Image (cartoon, rainbow, N blue to C red; front, top):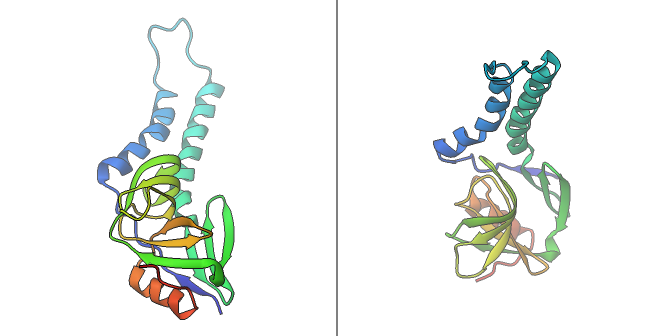
Length: 172
């Protein structure tokens, strides 16, 4: 039986959410602003291309966070993200509650509601983690093969209990 685990809602600051929409809006708006100093205006095809590029980028930013999901299956923890879905067998996992959160992004994606890739970690147990999260705080660590993954279910305690009930040991 598969059990979907709700992902924590995005809690990014307003300035960060607004900043993410600057690039698509700039592409759309600047494509149609006339340049009085130019000898000839941008061709209509160029303006349409930049507009479509901006709309596509905006759609991408809106869709990426919706791809993040955690599902408890009979055999393992299934994690879905924009770049694909994979399943970790329960026997390979360890879980750890933490009050710490993500630090600086070393590599990966950092959009409001969608953080994946390598991040520094603010807690004492790890220097860096692999994030597959919707927030930078309020998550837990799931270790697999010695690699810590930072996940953000809506209820981390219930998620940890569900993993423990499936035989996943809790790390101190």
